Amino acid sequence: MEGLTIGWYGALAGLALAIILILKKLNPVYALFLGAIVGALIGGANLEQTVNVLVSGTQSVMGTVLRVLAAGVLAGVMMESGAAETIAQAIVRKFGGGKAILALALATMIITAVGVFIPVAVLIVAPIALSVGNKMGISKLALLLALSGGGKAGNIISPNPNTIAAARGFDLDLSHVMLAGLVPAVFGLIVTVIVASLLKKKGVMVSDQEAVNGNADTSKYPPLGKAIVAPLVAVVLLMINPIGSLSGIDALANFKVDALYILPLAGIIGMLAMGQGNKILQYTSSGLTKMTATVLILIGAGGIAGLISASDLSTQVVSLIEASGISGTFLAPIAGILMAAATASTSTGVILATGSFGQAILDMGTAPLAAAVMVHTGATVIDSLPQGNYFHVTADSMKMTIKQRMGLIPYEAIVGGTMTIVATLVYGFLF
Image (cartoon, rainbow, N blue to C red; front, side, top):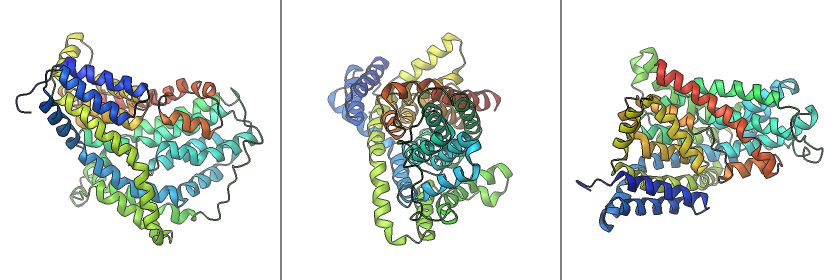
């Protein structure tokens, strides 16, 4: 690897090939590896150097892989115990029918924010949404926008793989990236509620047959007081360090316990609080299974990241932006938007954007935290395209046709776009 510089055209060719193969439905891991291999060879590396590029790149993502696997414990506990459903039901009951859209958006936001994957959060709240929508006369379009927009807002302040990837991509603490996403997330929630309220009567309504499963039997779920223990422990422990840094309290600022320890610990404490300690094997196994696909994509993205870091692409990108006269700050959100659109996934988009353009973004003078938040919010703009599983999972959850689901994409882009604009203004230009 010493002295090897791959031509920028090889890096671009590899990235383009990987994206084309993903769009053609090849498994993303193989698509990313194949793109990295072909790109390295085109860029001037020999067969041995190409293997070294891949190994070096995959090694660079192992820190993220460890933290994502650790997050699986908390995710497994929240999903399998019924704690997430308990929280969702409680929020919707608290707000009542009059504020149904706010309640649904907030429920999905909070469930995603406490470590449940966004597609799973939508699946959890969808039956409640169908029941509420049928009673209140709210269209499926408005209901799914409430769920998807709320989920996107929660996703940028969560200990989920996308946030872990944004943090590790710029060598930051997870808690700082979660906290920095709070302002854009609040704006995302507000815009979700406004736009969904305007769409209440637009599109197909919920039929009586579709609403029958909305009032699920909650007797087997843990009570709310116990259900919130795991996320509460996680949030409190993750926030000690940033709160200490902001307030100038050294004792708190010196509390530097990694998410690798905090997330599994919170999951186990939550499980014990719910009296389900005997299910530790079941819950952790489920959490690990749910994280496996993300981990594999991370390793694949590491291959592409290795290719791009061994090339002079970042130097060329910086030169091009400087020559064009536009602010280099825009590279971060644009990278997030394009990579998430190509892969139809927030987490894969963040992984690719940080791995491919992270160095170029920092070379433009953007601070690491600002870069992380702008890439992260950018990845929520058009990440729900049909080549990804989120599109189909959410369509099925709300019993929508492909055409009906396609009609939601522009409104989801308004929510993600708002969060990206707010993040870019706040972190790119004001601070």
